[in-house]
Amino acid sequence: MTKTTACHGGLTITTWWFWWCTAALVPFVIGMATCLKDVFIEVPIAIREGTTAILRCDYDLEQEALYTVKWYKGRREFFRYVPKELPHTRVFPLATINVDVSESGPNQVVLRQVTPELDGKYRCEVSADAPTFHTQIVAAWMHVVRTMDGKPELHLEKPQYSLGEKLRANCSSPLSNPPANITWFINDKELGNGRIIRIPSVRPSGQLFKTVSSIEYDVLIAGKLKVKCQSDIYHVIWSETEVMLDEDKPRLASILQPHDHSAGLTSSPSFSIILLITCVIIR
Ligand SMILES: *[C@@H]1O[C@H](CO)[C@@H](O)[C@H](O)[C@H]1NC(C)=O
Ligand SMILES: *[C@@H]1O[C@H](CO)[C@@H](O)[C@H](O)[C@H]1NC(C)=O
Image (cartoon, rainbow, N blue to C red; front, side, top):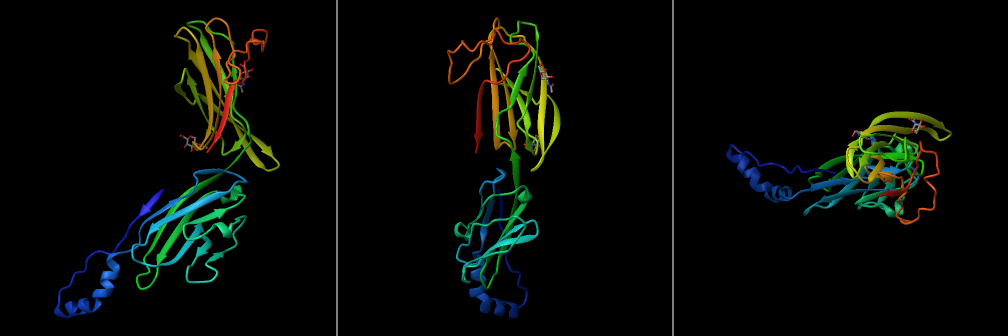
């Protein structure tokens, strides 16, 4: 969020006739003493392709009247709100932008079905009416993310570890553009991003990436081991997979079936354990 304030400063008057002018201008000067301030822009930092984006612009006009609110993507204006005109709103065509006019007004513009082309910098320009025409501009970035549904795939080299052994694991994110970041946790302690490779994958809709991360971890504590891999895009779109390992024998833990030991993990190949508790949270 960005904020600006720029009211006029004081006047410096040196000669008598300037004083006279000032007296004549008193109403005008008082008018300027209160002005447009506290202009804020709020746009989604990251949003999924195909969804609806609400871009907000808030401001305090104090005693002034609103003249216009203009919205730009980059240098191109795409929406204008003018309370003195009918209709109050005007939309300027701009590649793939789909303004929902019925939901857009003095403080927001609503974009339907956002496309990756709409990734970029947005500006809101607010102008007060005559005589001051105070104008302020605030800007913010919106990233449009293309991502496949799903959760990261977590692979462990072995299903069980004893003290002093080295745990090796890798994790791959769901396909996305931009590529996701991966963060590792063991027993809820953050381990960092691991060794990362990004694998491009060309789809009819465009290029996507899979992030694959691997870690090595010295098992120095006895007892259960909770290994978690989190895939994250701008801290807004994320999902995670976690596996709970016993020191002696492996066991799958699940929020839904916490006591279900029948899903024979012990009989599965020892080099790979995939997936467990997962949740996809989008906000
Ligand atoms: C991930 O780990 C599994 C099991 O250890 C291994 O078979 C696979 O090759 C690894 N994949 C990558 C991309 O490192
Ligand atoms: C991944 O992490 C880097 C470093 O923190 C950050 O600059 C970048 O924006 C992140 N990418 C995504 C898609 O979240």
